[in-house]
Image (cartoon, rainbow, N blue to C red; front, side, top):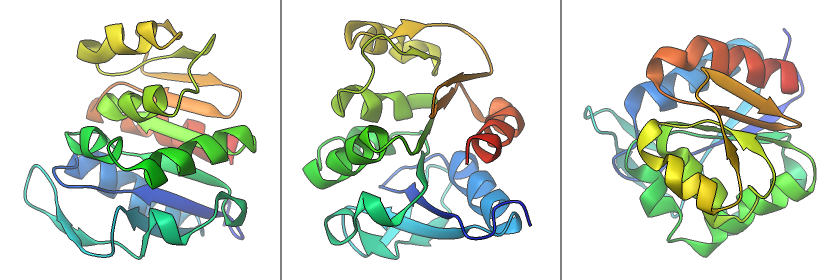
Length: 170
């Protein structure tokens, strides 16, 4: 299995995009990765389409040093995530340790809040383009963009390309 021995975080908060959570979750597990669901607290979160997931850990209780990367789903969840300093710090710590940081759709908000976009080339859902540009990013409209260990994508239709890029980066 291509991801055997890898440990990957998937962040979760209320109103996550169900497809952008579950597709990476199962694809990473299928590849042999140890996937840890991390929220602002250990609780059950509900996605936009009504699916539910219980987090395995809170962001405050884990260390970036123990993981190989993080996947951040979109939906409205990133707007909730960015209000939690421990979640923002976790993303910044992973980025600074040159680990994989992957964000799709509105998850670019977390990258902006983590202050890791300066001079990086990224993509996202078109409506947050201005937010990313104001945070110092070079925005392009492509299904997936890889800038070092930073992997970004636009929307659920792009999930296959997004996951191929994440797996290659890991």
